Amino acid sequence: MIITHVESFAVEIPLKPERRMVSALGRHEQSRFLVVRLGTDVGLEGAGEATVMPRWSGETIWGAKALVDHVFAPLVMGCDPHDLQAISARLDAASVHNWFTKAAMEMACWDLQGKAAAKPVYELLGGACRPRQFRCRFSLGAYEPMRAAETAAERVAAGFTTIKVKVGGRSEEDLARVRAVRAAIGTHVDLMIDANGGWDAGTAIRCIHAMDDCHLVLVEQPTPPGDYGALALVRRKVRPPILADETCFDLVHAQEIVRHDCCDAISVYPGKNGGIAKARAIVELAAQYGIPCSIGSNLEWDIATAAMAHLVVATPNLQVENYPGDVLGPAFHEFSIVKRPLAINGPLVTAPDEPGLGVEVDWDIVRAHPCA
Image (cartoon, rainbow, N blue to C red; front, side):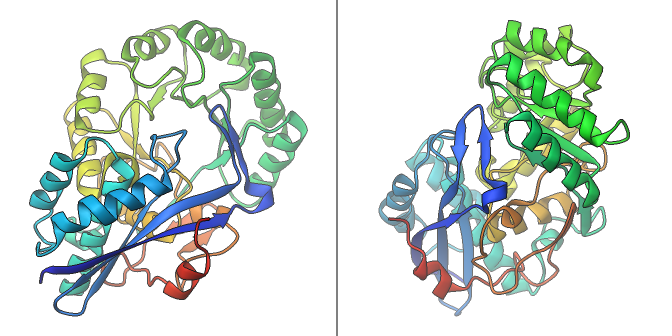
């Protein structure tokens, strides 16, 4: 089996009004992502998704499309999608970073591999090590306190047992929001915060101490990406465990995290880390040093969400039982790009068991919603 053609589609889908996100990085009201289709000489097709956000990884939908069409496509034509190591090496040699765009190409290769073998991707990864259905947390935007409290209470009533609150802006507003949420959900629900790198070390330490009465179970990326020393300082000075996210895109970043001993857990996911295989390599490195991992999110659609679910089901050190992740992106959007959306029931997500990624893209919908 060899790759014979590559197509890419810039697509725009709004978030549901009640799920539009506000964070230290700004507002996110519509998703502009790239959908990739790889064709082969045996008639099989594979799909991938680049969940690009300029404020987050620096990638844009227009840059991702140009990179796929003019740089990556010629490099993978004639390649066997089973040879992921060689394909990844070609993409890495042609372009640094661009993790989400590379992940879209890699996801499509896994999709092709699974379809060719008539097996779901989690089987190709070694088989399930946990049930296909697993529990997620709910990520709450940096809303004003009353709205945040009402939404949190609604999500707890829907079955969520962990609520994540976005912070990293004005300290007084962050504190008011977190306290309002804790009051609304009671003491039996786990509460964590995510600053998206919006605080410096001093502000982070001061704010987390001020939230002692909120009984936080986890603090995600309190300091700017790449400042491992600041993250390590915060970890030493506060009580809740620290989750690294934006500071870990690739294996070198993971090695720096280990070297600086700056977190208690690492957030990974295929898009952020350049693909399923690269995300898994980070998780396995972390396991060598006793660092658990969780699954993060960039509000993916069904293709990338399926890739995340397969990774969770097949990877022991993705300890979602102890550190619930976020695999709910499709539920945040107004409609789906696949014919049978993933099974998402409140906090419970079920990994597909059909061949490949297990989702069938509706290409008519993809074409009908181009990014302007």
